[in-house]
Every structure is written in structure tokens, then in C-alpha cells.
Length: 436
Image (spheres, one colour):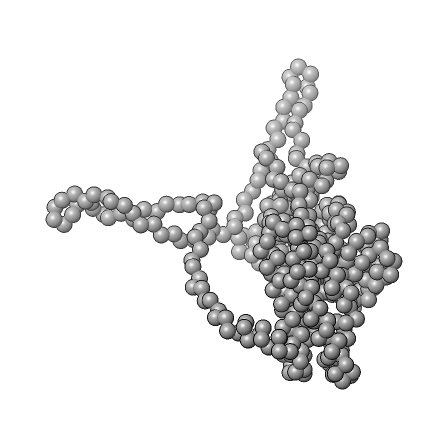
């Protein structure tokens, strides 16, 4: 306890450095319009000619609303006067054949809904202001068609993810409005997320939309996969751990949350002591993230040197207070939760490829949480699965630093004629814009 208080005192004596925010320069890649402001006359009041000695430049960020325009495809008809043979160039292949939507418009609708969380009725109003009438049913049909066409890409990305040795897993509820023609009662569906770690050169997340939180969905998704699974204490993953093919990696953030809730509600006088130690562990991880060129072995050695002593200190604290606090108290429950999962929680110390917690994939669930507040529900299980295909590609594109609109526009343009055997070229971590 004395060591904890000493560390806390040292941290408190450090003065926080308050940096005044600096105005960011506008990016160089923006199109620039130069507007010159010069005197109406270069004649001085004294009668002499003025001489220009320099200039001051100030910049304003301008915005031009998005515009619709018609793209007319004119195919000339050519005939041979000798043999009457008629020749005409074929139309390019499109994701929605004979439809009016270009790949760019389809991409805009998808990104607006699943990245910017704009429900279709809001998109419709935005298009109306531009003088374009598109019904919600039309927009919904476009999304459904794209979800089907993008499914092979989502499945190919799933295969790549299941080749990785370490995965995160999490799940979150999404309401399903209609499960059948005669059943209009809402049902709670679930999105299951499986993501590669932030240490992996392959950055991807797979969303698996299902009609329940049953562990059979995780069992089916991970069937045959062997490796380390980072997750919370949800029982749905336990079957995979019992098989021996999957090794559990605990989430320190969940253990911390137990003590944090007790601390902020004032239900425990000792919870803060556990929080101080856990905060030390996260401070060490923050230092590791700064070492961007470090290898897995570098991380393992650093953790053994710095994190292992703190973990030992935390373990001793847990065991000591386990004997002191009343067994039925909230503090005892938090301690028991952490001790019960200790092997899984401490596993990251011995492998630099393993993360300290599951926050990485929980962050990938935020788009679904924001979506629930805007488009509210999935119309059916199948529409939820199509949405999961689209969200998989959009979020994985963002993880790879891509602009989702540019990525989907290009993919939807190339997909109809792209070879199935080369589909990996269109996956977010492999994608490169097609050169003209």
C-alpha cells in the first residue's frame, strides 16, 4: 500500500503541460483557386509609381456541395454496306445491370449509411434538395444488391482472417424487425466481430450477423481454427477453449471495469489500489506502442522486464484482499473475477503477438452502436447479413487507411469482370487503385 501511495504521489506532483493548439495548415493536395487583391491604382498619392515588394497569403477552406450529373453512354451503330453486318460496342458490365446507379453513386449510398450512419430517409431528403427523386425502396434495393455482390469479397476476407494466429472476438445486439412474413414482432439479433490484432500486418475485421447470441455461432465460425482468441468472459466461446485448439486470452479492460465501477460509485475503499496497478500496465503498453518498429520478441522482453513485476504485485494484492474483504461484497466479486481469469489475463506477458485487452475489437463495434441509434434495426436476418458484408469491407478499408468511398467505387466498378481466382486483389489490405 505504501508503494502504491508513493507512486500515486509522484504522479500527482507532475505538472500537466498545457499546449496551446496550433491551427493546422490546409492540405497541399486540395485544389487551389488564387484570388488576388491588389490596389485599384499603383500610383502613390505623392505622384510616384508603387513597386511590389512581396505579398501576404491567407487561406480559407471552401466547400462545394456534391453534384449529380448524367453520364450518357452513346454506342454508335456501324453497318457494312457490302454485307450488311451490324457492329456495336457492348455496354460495360455493372453491378446492377440496366440500373441507373453508377458504381460511384452506389458507393456513396453505402458509405453514407454504414460509415456516416445516415438512414435512407435522410439520404432521400438530401437528394431531393439536389433535385433528384429516389425512393427509399430504390435505395434499399441498391444496398441489398450490393450486399449480395460484395459477399464473395467478405467471404474471401474471412478466409484470410482465419489464417491468422491471434484473433479478437466480441458481439453486440442489433434488433431484427421482421423474422418472417407472418411475424412482425422485433427480435434481438447479434453481430459477432472477429478482428486481427493491431500488431498484425493484415488489418481486417469480419462481422457475422446472426439471429441470437448462442455459442453455436462462434463454434461454427471458428470451426477448424487454431490459435489465441482474445475475448471477454462470455460463455459462448467456452466450447472452443474446451476443444484445446483455441487458447483463451483475457481482457484486462474487463477486469479493470469491475474495480472502476466500484470506485466511481464509492462502493469500495480499496478498489483504487487495484486501478493504480492496472493503470501502470496500460502505461507500459502505451510506451510499447511508441516503438513502432519493435518485433513481437521485443514486446515480450519489454513486458517481462516492466509488466511482469507489476502483474506479480497485482496478483499479491488480489490474494491478500481476497482474505480480508467480506465474501459477499462487490469488491470480493471483482477480486474473484480477476483471480478466476488470471491465467488468461497474464498470458499476454509471454507472447508479444498478444494484446493486453479486447478494446481493439470493441472499437470496431462502435459503427454498429452508432448505426443502432440512426437506422435503428435490420429489416430481416438476410438484410442484416448483407449489411455485415458491407460493414466488413468498409471498416476493414478504414483499418488500412483507405477512403471507403474511393475503395468501394473502384471495387464495384471492377467486380463484374474481375477474375474469381484473383479476388484477393480487391481485399482492403491488398487493394490498389486501378491505373488508367
